[in-house]
Image 1: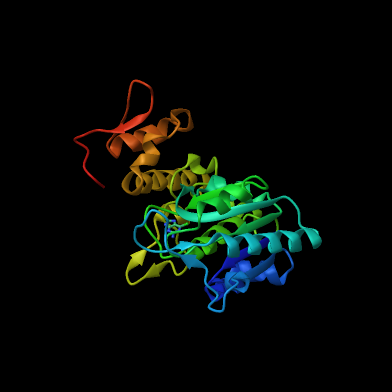
Image 2 (image 1 turned 90 degrees about the horizontal axis):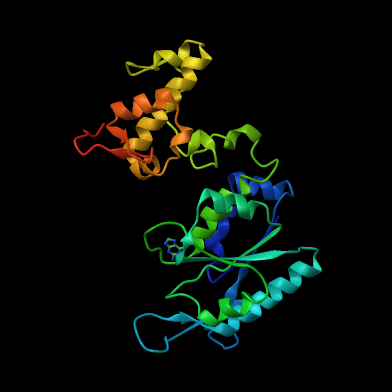
Amino acid sequence: MRLDVLTIFPEYLEPLNVSLVGKARARGQLDVQVHDLRAWARDRHHTVDDTPYGGGPGMVMKTEPWGEALDTTLADGYENGAHDPVLVVPTPSGRPFTQECAVALSARPWLIFTPARYEGIDRRVMDEYATRLPVHEVSIGDYVLAGGEAAVLVVTEAVVRLLPGVLGNAESHRDDSFAPGAMADLLEGPVYTKPPEWRGREIPEVLLSGHHGRIARWRRDEALRRTSAHRPDLIERCDPSALDKKDRETLSILGWAPGPDGRFWRRPDAVEE
Ligand code: 6GU
């Protein structure tokens, strides 16, 4: 996979040299090119922003540097054998970035990221490139960052760990919280390792039992408990056909009841666990 990042803060992308992504690069599974957007600014001061038409606070990133940077990057990629690029545009006004998006992007051979600073990029840039390649505007959550660079790191890590041969164990992401079909979209419960006792705290006995059926059941109940506490919205939209008899018992204990459509809702009298 080829990744290009166009940014006015190339040093912000240094973490792409570390850990999982860094190793994938070192192994040649990933070709990452970080470009300084200011290299395409025409004036002495390397200006990339200007005041917004219509007034208002802040500055807007100018069309020309982005246009030239993207043209150069696309030409360079094609010359070097890359194909089928997607433009990934981090913005708080994008569609929510989810595991499903990560899976879709991990199937693409070439991602080009355009993290913005200031109040964003002149709309005409994305309107123009949307006529040439798919453009995905993505937000990584309901909060505002000072720029899209941290979002590029987030999206890259979520995507690269899905590439074949990047994670040691292909099974490792089957049970990820949010992996499609994983524990049918429940959060993962707690995990433990040695020593068996630490500061007087023991491991839940079932995990030492060697009884795989009971262990799987316990994990499932812990996942339900954690999801109920931290993400009740996931229980509410859970497909009821994904829940077995014991799931329903556990949910009942946690204060959930099936409604007329079979979906679960929290009984108003339920006490928080
Ligand atoms: Cl992708 N960019 C910025 N600036 N803020 C965000 C975001 C992205 N996602 C959530 N907040």
